[in-house]
Structure formats: structure tokens, C-alpha cells
Amino acid sequence: MKFSFASLFLLFFYAFCSAQKTATTKELPVPCNGSADAVPGKYTDHTNPKYGVHSLKGSAQDKAAMTKQLIAVEKIEETSRSNFKLTGCVARVSFNGGSKIEVGSFPYNRYGYQLALYQNVCHVTEHLVKTVGEYRSVLRVEINGVGFGGDNFYGEYGDFYVTDRDVRYSIAIDAKEGTHYDRDRFNHRSLIARYITEDMVTNGRTDNYKDYHGDFLKLINGEGYVERWERGHRDDESRPNGYQWIDRHYIISRPGIPLLVPVTRKGYLEALLQYYDIEKNNFIIAVGYKKKSNPEKASICEADKIEYAKENERKKAKVKQLLASSSAEWLQQPAVVNKDIGPKNYDRSSNGLIYFDKFYDGDINSLPLYEYNAAYFKPGAGKPLKPMFMELQIRYELGKDVEYSKRYFDNFLENYAIEALRKMLY
Image: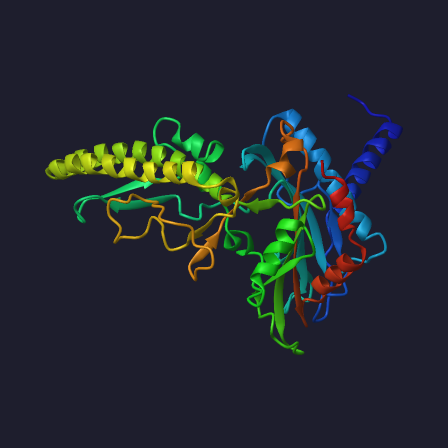
């Protein structure tokens, strides 16, 4: 095959242009001298995540709906930096989540936005800018992701004995064991396993030991923010060479209506009746396992079945009598239980895992219980992808060698439109 001079020229020209394009897309090394803090930063949006893909779960239709909401969150952050020069770091966006959760009795999809700041540093021997592979400073927005009730204040499992301390039974509290237990413990949790305490809300969000209750009220009412020191201490004085790593949380909710409300005595007593049926079912299963694994204990197990059945009926009768004989006003009072009565009480025998004797208002061991506010979540029933509430988290650093983080945080305080997030709520 013969080529004309013109054809050969074009062939070499296109090859040259292709080589030039490849060379220019590869990032050139950036020299530095001691610090990379002043080096212009880089930002990549959701179209270019660090690991190439987003971890959103669900159908194509659900992913599209979630992505639309997350792009709106992304635009709010980008707008906050319209007059801000990012330096000393690489900022990368990613989307994640999509799993279904149950908030009270309402199912929602939980999904989130993340902007991670990867610090740029100056390599001590190469004198070139390098980007640290892990991040410490980060901005996150979780949609329908306030994890107030991820645990059970009584625990997920517990054990007890009936007639012999050497024969103990371990049973689940959150749902009936059986074929559908793994599904039901997430999607149809027992009422008592849905209850929430102040500690469950504040743990991991605040270390304000002087006013945990005040921070609890901020969170459930969507007012202000709370903070927790990951490194350093909130009472530490600022020092020239000091370092602090601080985690700040805002709950974004509709104003004027709390996310949580107190459990009533009536509600708690009715939840106990439901739980006693769950406990009975799970005890029978546990007895079967015990007899198979310890056949020499079979006679004790049979005696335990008889005694436990009596005790279960006694517990239910006591609660039913209290429901029938108490005034409506008394039953509507907040349920305050004894925080020390739970499944890990090894001295309590045939009372089972949870035993009720009285409410503990004003007692040193009192534990008020809360639940998700049905009045808040009912408008979104049947619309699990709609943003009903959000948790905004910003984790930032203060110190001589992490100025990039403080600059970003200062700009966040001045320009991030938190109210724009609130306007997205359904």
C-alpha cells in the first residue's frame, strides 16, 4: 500500500497530537520547599470519585432519585466556595448509602454526601508535593440518616436462668427468633427495642460533660450544633504548637416539631406485653437448643419450661392489671425506667430478661425513654426516598500544620447555607 506525502504528514501529525494530549493529561510534579500549604488545591465533584464508583444501593430508579438529591447537596457546598480559594489539599466528593432503615414504624432510605479533604504535604527528600492517602477533615450530609436508634438500650441479646444458675438461656430481645428473624430484627423490631435514651443520641456526637441534656435537646429539636473532641479537649487552651481535631454535628429538621418525644407509661406497658410474647417464643427455642447441646441437663430444662411459663404469665398479669386500673392521666406520663434492670443482671433468675416493678421518676437510677415522633414522620409515609431529616457533620483540625482545614472550616461558618438544606426537606 502506498501513501502520499500528504497522507504520511497527516498520519504523523495526528500521532504527535495524541502523544501531546496524553502527556498533558498526566499531572506534572509540583516542587515545594518545606510546605505545600500554599499550593493551589484541587476539587473533584461526584462525577470523579476517588475510587471510580459510588456505593449507592438500590434499583436504577432509586439511585437516580437519590443522586438528584445528593447533587443538590453538592451544589450547596460548591456555592459556599464561590469566593474561596482552596489551597493545601485535594477535595473529593463521593455519594454512598441507599440501604433501607426503619425510623419508628416508618421505612426510609438512608444515603449520604461526603467531601473529604486530603492534605497536601511536601516530601522531605524529593521536595515535591504529595497528597496524603487518608483524610481527617471531612464534610458529610446524611439524608434520613440520623442514627439515634441503631442500638437497643437493653441490648440485642441477654441471658438468664430459671431454677439452676448453671443452666442459662440466651435469647434475642429485638424480634421473635425463627425463619424470619434476620429480616424482622431490622424491619419489624419489637416496640421495646425501638426506644431511645439520651445517651444513645449524644454518644459519638458530643463530649459536653457540663450539659449533655442541653445538647440532647439541641439534637432532637434541630437547633444549633454539638461538638466532640477527637483529639485534644474542649477545655484545652490554644497553644502555638497544639493540635485539635473536632467533630461538629447539626441535625437538620423541620422547625417547631421534635424528632423524638417521650414514651408514655401506657406505651411502655403495652410494649412490655408484646415483648413478653417474644420472650416466651425465644425461650422455648433456647430450651430446645440447650437440650440438644447439653442432654444431661434435659431434666432441668423441662423444669425450667414449667416454672418459666408461670413467671411469664405473672409478669403479663401485673402489667395488664396496671393498664386496667390506672387513670388516663397517669398512663400519659413519661415512662421513666430503672436503667439497672436489664438482661445482664445475673442475680435475677426467673424474671426473664426484662422485668417491670415500677416507674422510677426522680430516682438516682432513672432512665427516661424516647421514641421517634410519629407526627413528624407521618407526612413522608410511603415516600422513603424523600429527605425527611438530615445530619450535617463537619470534622475539622486546628494546628500549625493543618491550616488548610481551618481555612475551609472558617469559610464553612461564613458561607455554607444550612437553611438551604432545610428547604430540601419534605
